[in-house]
Length: 224
Ligand code: DC
Image 1 (cartoon, rainbow, N blue to C red):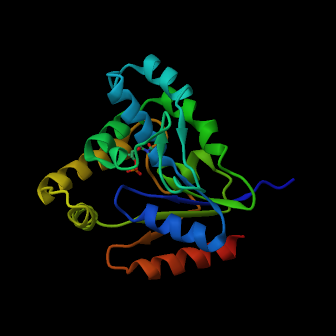
Image 2 (cartoon, rainbow, N blue to C red):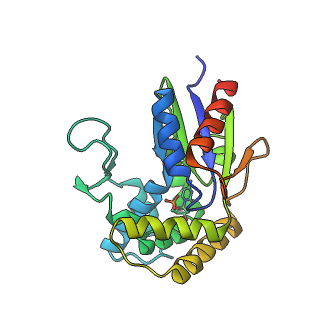
């Protein structure tokens, strides 16, 4: 039997992957995998248990037993749970993002999370966003997109998002954090952030969200 269709969307932080992936999954009636959330959940769990970012053995054990859930129905629909507790906001902090990026550089940690991510590939199909969806996790995906934007624009978007949430942050610090994370994610030895060979790159720096959604929808329909 043919495997369910996958639309793989990769790119750096703040390029709009999450928003676009959610909108496209909704329109197609597909499942959604926010793979970054899994790395962020592992990061949060490691911070809670005071496991060091370089303690690979402890991190792998933690990854294998990680109790996480992404309910799609009921009162908790759309929330992210760790050990049965809602942590949707807690995993979105800059500290958690940086820690996630550090843990994600360990090969064994990535291996431990591989099958968990592949388990999201269920009929009628999946929209998956992350750094290595098209290159590693769903290397056979028929539709691969690399979503990017200038680092200045991505920092601005993140700043705006935080302001809307009532969180004050310095644009300068955000820009520096983003540059550090870009560097770590693109330069790591294992599954580095890069476009898959067949990926279509979309630079969203000056594009409206709706235009990006339409473009991705057209690619998804063409690849289905
Ligand atoms: O997409 P995000 O900002 O939520 O991801 C947080 C970190 O997790 C990112 O800096 C690197 C890591 N990550 C990864 O290595 N591979 C993925 N597929 C998704 C995220």
